[in-house]
Image (cartoon, rainbow, N blue to C red; front, top):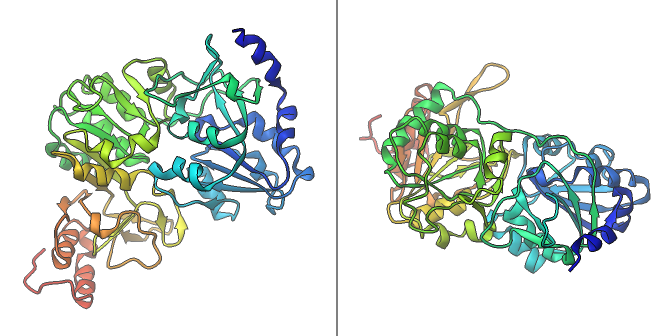
Length: 444
């Protein structure tokens, strides 16, 4: 079979390819570094010809030209499943709408409930067998492409090829158009510099992680910082099973800690669904037999997670209230990120033999005016609940780690106040008394 001739027959300029988009269509941009920059720019150039083109993406780092060119949203209406910092700023300006989801459900939503008229995303160059690797977006990409009426692939020469368990590639016979062109290097997101609070949180978690544990590190700075600090510990033979592979895993590998040898499921393989980080990370995952991508509806399924003994889940949050409810996605009504896979892994880790789920946060933060605020609140007032109190597990701040599983309301209040910033403990006690969840005998 001559796949090159089929490739050439489907090759289009970006302007030619986006002619397939019609007013009223649903268009999908996939996720993270698979964002189709050339096609997005070409579609933006058609602004005045189109109305009500609805676009879905997630964790897109921007700029998104179809959004930037249309501040009234008459032509393009952008929506995100999980906000990057760039998409958060769009939401603040009223230029992006959030779509609630749990990551394991994203592709099933497409399969059962959603329409995709045109799907477009970046992929590495085609291989000799006519396949395009779905690279850093493989956790969700195949399910979206399968649902699309029209598939347009944009070749990005900088993307790594990541080996997969299944659904990590698409064949040219399933593709309608192919676009080529020069791209800037992939955006990079190295691990943040740890703060003293991050280091204190890591010191609390490390003693509760056994040798041979399998790690999930969530999206955001703190889990990756904590993961990188684990590279300096005495832990041995750690494994990877995660929705997102970031640089913390590369740091663990370089330190000799990440071997995947003692995983009780898919041993020898570090498993992920999405990848973004530094150039070194992209090079590490490129055709690396030790790292595989699989669909998030499989990776994040609690029953899959639970097949790993000693599954340790480390995620971050924005705030928790005295009942044990956690928000990892909003500050008040302001959308910060999304549920993502946090609830997936909290559930799966609780089911894992020897597993533990840690949700981490600094005890307080200082706003732009210099005023300090507690991240532990008496009760939520408009914050979206990411983790319900019925699934509360370990909550960690720099002042301690407390396990809320099976605890009554007064026990939860006592435990959470014990790890709150000292400046706020007395007022939290007073609030707990008013809420009738405080024992007078409790001591902090």
